[in-house]
Image (tube, rainbow, N blue to C red):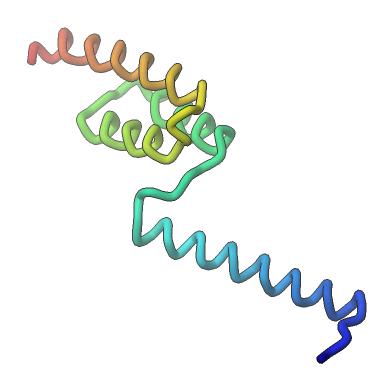
Length: 96
């Protein structure tokens, strides 16, 4: 049995944190089922739709952002309704 001193525990926690961050980052590259914070999604959503040019790729990116939120998230509900409205406007404008 090993006794760990506070300094050693801090190093272990720090290594565990970096491992968690790296594994989360690599899983974001591999899978799209990673949950993001509402703040991250909100920030990305704003950047996505501030340009005014909406394409199919924009809507696909927006759906990916929605998929990254928890299913019960109020932000997910609000943004999914907003996305539906934006898609309707886009469809009318494009004539699809």
